Image (tube, rainbow over the protein chains, first blue to last red):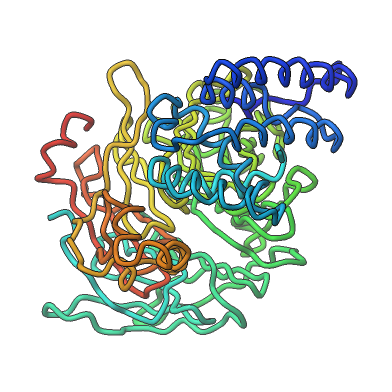
Length: 135
Length: 378
């Protein structure tokens, strides 16, 4: 799963930021090709960054946020999103809800409802109970 | 029907244990007492009230062969109760803890018991004949948080613990003069008392409820993140499987066979997990009946009730059904199940009956006979 594994010491913050920037460009390309689900998958790959560095986490959140906001058809998204992404997506939904930004919260709540239907309350518990791999 | 008997004993039960012949049950009704009930002419009658603790009793274990009860409490003490004539006489065991004791279990040979505590410590207690006294030896400085569960390996030496730091650890509890050399040899290592054999680092949140399989080859424990962990080849290179499930987290587990585990917890309904022929563990199903209740929120847990409210403003009426299509509440237990105990029939190698108790004050006896779909795993 995406969030398991230990912090890799060799990955310094700069290297992670570079990788996130690369990911960001890839996502923009995918969005231009109207592949929002592929973009979301790309955004969630390697998330959260395996570092306690808040800068990296914020940079990654911006990328994931971009992909989440681009989702128009939530049901359609779930038909092609594999269950292995559910737990990490839930974490980012809660980060979105914590921003208090109206359009972000609207979108996150919309996805949250469908995601809970599919992944159950256990998915929420996993995102709330994990205090180590925060997004 | 899987639940064969339901007894409402109290408002809330913290833990329970059965007498060797299963005719009596001891439980703590969420206070400083332990009540012992006996089934007399189809009615449960209160026989004894064990009053010695000052605070909530958090653990009870009743030894199968020596007929002794051990209790531990938030008052940091433990008592071993011996039946003499009609009375139960307590012996104080000084645990030397500065925080609450949380759980207790007799070792398989019943010459030791282990106590987990909020003091990040595990006590191994054993009887010293010459002093006529229970002695407590401490495993210190190993846990980073409260010890929520202890489980003895069938070899009477290895002890598994779970802790709120998310780890599951396995220790040697070899005590000179109590354990024999043979039992030490079977652990295949020269481990001294308190030596950590392995630390399992699978969970990122609180870990609860650890148990060994009947043979001691497999270990199962649960995390507060709705996951259950199965570990084979416990030793230097353990093989671990994490099983994710879609419902509320578990609090305790029980192996009924080598390949089947019952998990109980916040979902109020026992869950069955089993390993297929290739050894892959999966969630099979809920054990309790699923009654179709018209109002899911009414009989649901507080959590799902609150959850229903979150969405009910926009989608009134369908919210709960939409969220939990597979499970309508209103099962046997109405609140979190905190304790599961085997009811082992003499002569039978596998466990077909067990009992659960929880915050709703009920003790429920479950039977796995006549559950055809589960017989493949036994």
